Image: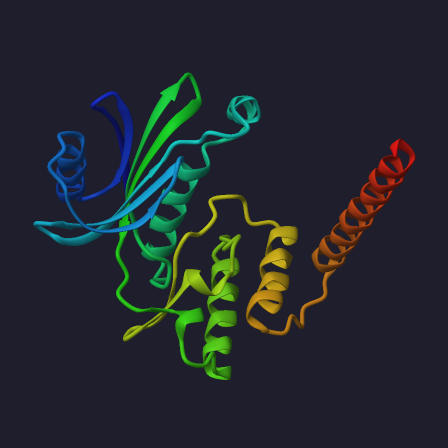
Amino acid sequence: MIVSRRLHGYHVHSRQPDDRYLSVFNDFMHGRISIVKVMRSNYKTKVWLIETDWGKFVLKIFVPKQKKLERVLKSIFKRNYYVQLIRQINNVRKRGLKAPNDFYLLATKKTFNYVSTYIMLVEYIEGTELWNMPEITDELKQDAKQLIDELHQHDMISGDTNGGNFFVTEQGLRIIDLSGKSCNFIRRAEDRIDLEKRLGIKNTQKDLGYYIVTWRTNIRAYLKEFRMRLKSRANGVSH
């Protein structure tokens, strides 16, 4: 069960029982965390591997910097993406699907419904990224396809099926960085098409979603090429 409360000026959503996760969040707010490894660091995202009294976790801090007006407008009409995700992962794990990495705590700093800062505490998975394997065997490809199919059956999507989001572990193939967006037939088709494009896993399900995504991709490519031609002609005339 996910419980929501206010702590340190944040809206905090955590999975019960949550004493350890709230303790880690409190330590972070007071500058008492032990960083083992900086996994990512840029102007909007920090991802750290941290050591705690309960083992290792991954701590993510995300501060959106781009498309602020668009995000403000979306916040008026749409549910929060990450709140949906922590609830979705909690639900599918209760149903027995353990492949997605667990999502323990989400803290958001909000102005009305617009979120300016996200803090996430998630499971650390020990394993090898799929694209770092010496060979992506047919067995691994089949495991990845089956994993995505299982996600879709539980009304979840990946949204980014690159090899860095799959981990080969002693317990089997795991997946990280899932999407909290609604699982519709178009997004399911995007996952399957992405698997073929990135990992060479053939998409055999050519349903309506497949044709819509393919048509949309072709139209965008045509419009991009058309704009480039117009720009090239305009530059030629100016010279």
